[in-house]
Image 1 (cartoon, rainbow, N blue to C red):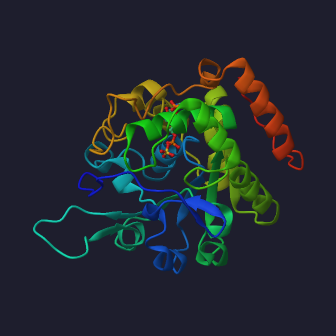
Image 2: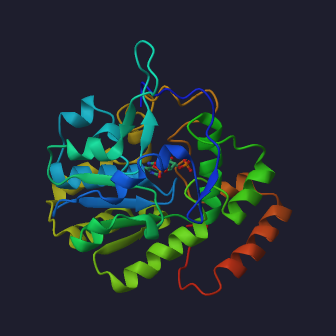
Image 3: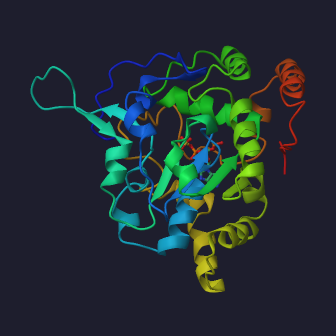
Length: 304
Ligand code: PPS
């Protein structure tokens, strides 16, 4: 990601009914035929749900504290399955070489591999279902998600131009975002959980409320039993302030992120949406939300 050849922002386009950019579809066939290993752990989220947070928790639970965590950025330790990024090449060539999440994963010698994805449930390669892979899904309330996504897209040319806040909010409601509709995403994975027992569905708000309790639930799901001391170390290492100052997780090494515009580890709170939504925007959003979630049993908290 430090050598990405990205000069202009990508366009959104309809991909099998979901808005995507080519950075996440250019390696589609390899992605669809990806072979999982029996002990792989997938972390699946709609963008900005707390993926990095839970990824780091998963690493610490599975491997403890490692040398790699102090020398290799987290996005290189835990690849994005669907990523297909052009890489800067030396000299002139007709087609730029591509960084492929699938190649990276195939070459990862660690066990278990932790694999990141933002794809909606219908796009997950069948190997995950066939192997009954363990899947951790993290969801975050829509209002804080859209705020966090807006600030991310302001800071990186890896995503389409966000435009102004008010239009952005409208686009979010309509699902015209990279990886599509938040509504479809959280509900699609939630429905899958009802028939596929190996999904552990978590909420960002619960993690904020009581990180230790959520780590206990994760351990139950993963069949891990860290000591009280190990758990305390993990809770300390994954606190917002510690992660914000950790260059291996805070994305300070990503050249395509402009930190003068925002930060990746930005606020880390529930309820920052209140600093962005006007009263009118909030009312309109709630009206749309009610409509779109009317058949869902999912409940989100917008304050804790
Ligand atoms: S991405 O780009 O989709 O991988 O981003 P993702 O990691 O899912 O989400 C980034 C948001 O998660 C917040 N975050 C945390 N909050 C609380 N505690 C900890 N430890 C933590 N780590 C990451 C991060 O600050 C982003 O949210 P916002 O609201 O923008 O601050």
